[in-house]
Image (cartoon, rainbow, N blue to C red; front, side, top):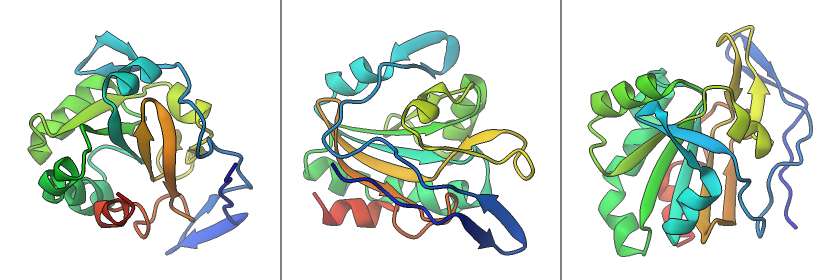
Length: 182
């Protein structure tokens, strides 16, 4: 199985995030069965069942709703590429963040995602931790957060995995990169 390697310490401007060697979910593995929320805490779904219903999907993980890189570049790249992703057989594009469901809904509305991108809330970071794609950002962002990643998923199985080497940058997880592998 393919495993990603993240260097021990990576500097971003004047900030420093610690990222130890990770053994995150690997290509060929089934997604964990963890609850995520859509639109409200009352609407919980199993991550595995949600992605099994949608045969071919792209899931992007972001460090936080309303953050500059996520709002100006990362999620918009998937909105721009949405029709091309659909033409290449992607049935679902979803975005997960360690935020509550109301924040994710409001963020989606502010970005104009409409029905193109499903905004998934992981308020306790249980889903991203189960993927081993969480990192401790308490000193900068106030809590454990999701690393920036993209997964190409088929029938709830990871087919491709993209993880930013510094957890938060935007170099290998844009829609254009994923499109090249479809």
